[in-house]
Length: 193
Image 1: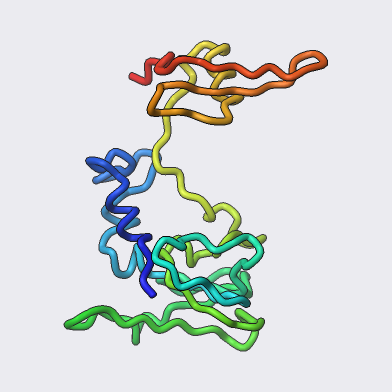
Image 2: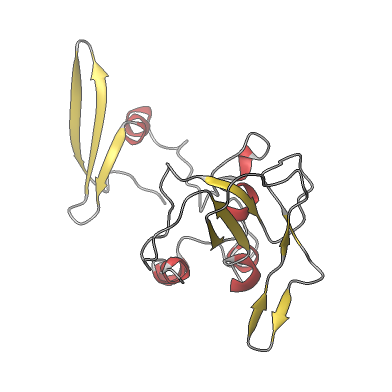
């Protein structure tokens, strides 16, 4: 079963605004982190203890079915015993596709395996997180400097719980005295310059 994950990555990024095309200052570098599709967007593997639904829109596994083991598009040089390694000799581009081979030593990736799923190379680095590689679970797409905003505007962002982009509204919630203050703010109130 092939899901819509790659289509969503490529299709939900109008004009490439989420990624840096060349050298990245502080976000994902599109050309090295995501492209080529193989082995970057489809360069990792996740092994699950429970079956996964066969649905194209089922992209994220339920939190009740976390990966037992995983591997990326490189060799695992960490102490993470849930992570295996890609066999860099046997994994290669073919005339009509790509061949992936992942290996797990007897001490790696132990558990019941009921389902296997491809993921990005980054997703195969530590699945849904690990005590060994906790810094690589999430990638920052781009950053925005907030130091030129007033402290009041920064607080509105930190208190935000929802943004309605269609109506240009930001909702925030904060405890205040003995109650809760819910605020609705028209955006853009910030000049992101």
